[in-house]
Image (cartoon, rainbow, N blue to C red):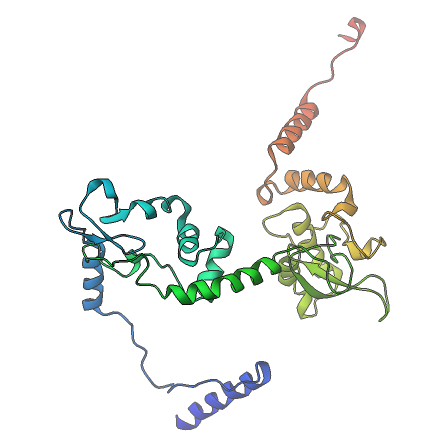
Length: 318
């Protein structure tokens, strides 16, 4: 048993050195894992969640933790907590509004998850760990390391927003699949505009790259038949690709057009893209959601297909 455990540990170290150049921390493989469940802790948490504030005393605000006096005009009750009037205005904005109030700069909903993780802020609301009947603090957000969060947030936000700004990739080429020349994120790809080692290399934009990754192009699966079903799914907005279902679609790198790309994704297809969407909707209706306009067009087309021809002359009527 000891020899087997040593072999497993050594294999783990070798794998880490090959992939990350690091040696992992190892644990005793014979140790019994703990369930992590403590009934006393669970009971305490249940008591905390079911507790309510004392309406006759000053208790903590649900969000910022400041002591709120027992004046009904000074607070709003939410889930058993007092919520001060200043924090009450944040409730409709969710976590993004709360974090914006803490760090002093506006954080968008799409940015908030990364911000709270990178500044180690988490959800700063007092209700996450506090009790609604506690006395509260003399200042707002006293339970948060607000100085560190305020100092770190601008740099993190700047990096997030710079990364999200559409830009041309370092190759100066359009996306290898959709052809768009600007994207907030680019990923290297094995595709080239033409043949030979000197042919311009194509990157993949932020929208196409996840589909290409699922197709395995980064793992060497560059044969067209392996990734074209994913290309079609990315192009028309399918929920998932169908094996060997491509409708003859070719990627931008195969179009022979200017490697510098286009202003809009899939612009090289012209009106063909809308026809592809309608075809997929007919053949695989559960894999695509049409816009209201596309749905009306399809319904009209179907009605025209089933409507009998109208005789143009009385003599044509039997």
